[in-house]
Length: 479
Figure 1 (cartoon, rainbow, N blue to C red):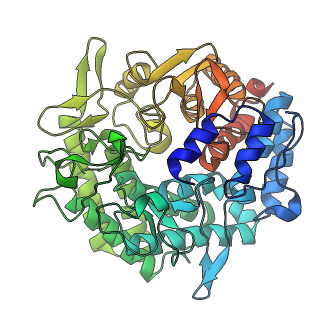
Figure 2 (figure 1 turned 120 degrees about the horizontal axis):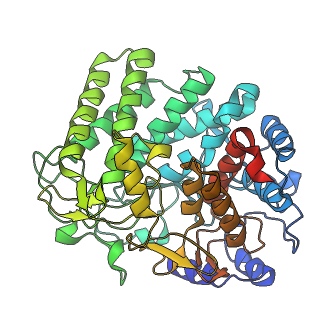
Figure 3 (figure 1 turned 60 degrees about the vertical axis):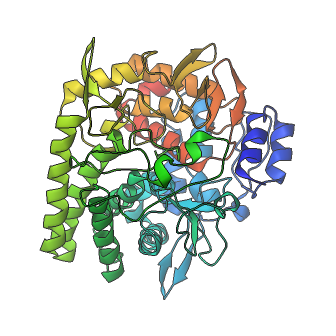
């Protein structure tokens, strides 16, 4: 089944019967089928891909702080969804090796896999098998980057053929690559995961010579994509009736002026950039490069790599201040994309890194600038913000007009200090689930039963992270 057929089917999945029929045509997520929101919809224990004592204890303890029974069941379904359905623990050369598929697509995105396991990091200190599984994710990501730093997705079995829709792409498709869309955030997320793992566990075992080589290649790739010395080696074209699936200008993307920013072919949504300097990803890179510099000094004792990463972070941040701030009638905000020539695109997309999600994923050097940007993003001034009878939120070109992504509602809550905003987000997220007990990719603004992707592990785990956070910081909002 190709990606477009899968999307069409999932969009129509409005009842348990239809959803069950569709799931039978997809890689099995092993979900239990139930018509009641009050019942667990996790796989049976024997069918779960990985079981963590620390995670199970955490779920049980957290549920005691959730007064809303529907939220409690959704949390118990969603928080462990990555471990229940998407991880494939194993070994490579005697060390942990953990592919993590994204859900209904049988491939491992560097972005998704990092985000999917992120909420488990604080629990790894209490659970050695869980720690080893996370180590395996870091090691697998380093292997993937060394195969091709320009790829966004890799096959769980690196000897398997690429994803069906990628095989005719006009690009240098290497063995093991699932899809080869150059996305700057795909190299930032593994740094974020590695740094978070190191800070939470103190363990340095994953950060060996292979990881060091992958990190050096990461920085080298970012420097090449500043395009100071030409366009670089990456090109991508795809035969498709969807314009966001391919890059213009002979596969290099629209022109940029080399001003210090890093070009990206595609957004975190896997949609093509209009202007290749994608601002949220460049802001993310500043944070990630500084995290890498810290690890290069403290763990690798590689001052050359540390200095290179630190210098690039400084250069990108300075260029962002100069070229990525837009003037509006309500004051300055971050643009979404720029080209260095003066062109700026004002919008935001639901996928993270986003402008809305900057405090969650990256640092914005100006808090007031972020607040104005946030206000813009969560308003109808943003062309991809939608409001309907079933909720409001940000979508994007990936699923199109009037399709709200619950992920944006989760990020809205995670980045808010307002109890009213968080309550509103929680209410809308419950509606978006349409009684399924899980978080979908997107849904029609006037009918949550018209949704896409019933098995989207990143969205599930992100929601679980939100509830786990609120259970500690604002438990009253869960009542």
